[in-house]
Amino acid sequence: MTRKHGDDGPPGQEPGALTGTADGRAGAGVPAETPIRRAGSSASVPLSPSQRACLARAIEGLPRRARAAFLLHRFDGLSYGEVARRLNTSPAKVERDVARGLDACCRALTPLPPAPRSTMPRSAMGV
Image (cartoon, one colour):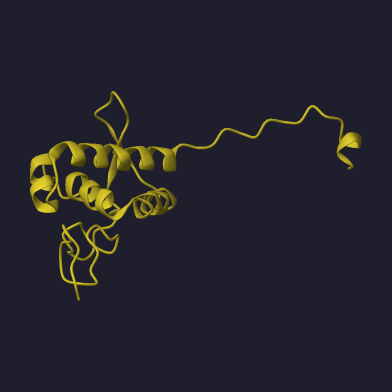
C-alpha cells in the first residue's frame, strides 16, 4: 500500500481519529474530563455528554490534516513547532489548522438563535 506524504501511523490508522489521540493511542477523542474555558476567565466549565458528542462531531468534520494538528496541539499539548515537525508542515499551517478546529468547536457549542416568527397571517400561508 502506498502511503501519502505526511501520513502518520500504520496504514489504515488515521491520525487524529476520535478513537484515539492524533498519534494513534487509543482512548482519547474528547475526554469526559475535558474542560471548556470561557473567554476572559480562568474558570473551567465541565462538558455534558451531549456537548462532548457535539465536539466529537465537529472535530470529525475537520479535514484529516487539520484534525490531526488540532488534536496534537490541544489534546496532546504539543507546540505548533512540534506538531509541524510531526506532520511535515509549517508552524503557520498548524496555527491555521488549530484555529479552524477551535472555530468548528465554538460553532458546535453555540446555540442557534430561534427562528424568526413569521408576520404573515396564517391564512396567507394556507394553514
